[in-house]
Length: 125
Image (cartoon, rainbow, N blue to C red):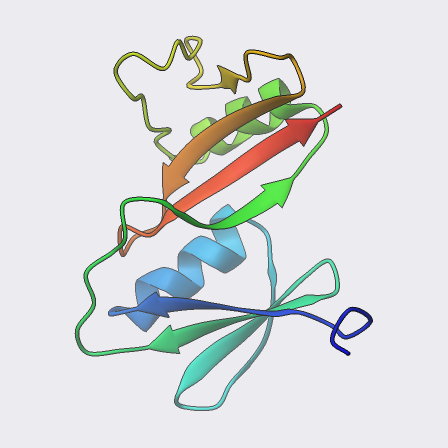
């Protein structure tokens, strides 16, 4: 039923101005519109609605991620733009914050948006 329909992703923000700058300028998503309730961004054909909320406690797990190629270069480029990648004790991440899956099937790096939402980039074989 929904298997051939487009996904819309939702991310909450308490500070729309900071979120807009981060998602547009830092991450490079294309700003589409602001309807007063949410800002709409295009992420390679996927709609992301950054919903304006007054209260929100970020979850401690990833709520939005991107599948990428060349993860090391991408992480380096994002770091150069001021993105801080999370280091989790005992995960065995490298100096960039990239975690290699034990079976070699993926590499993942985590970072937060200005509201503390956990985001990720991952490269899969």
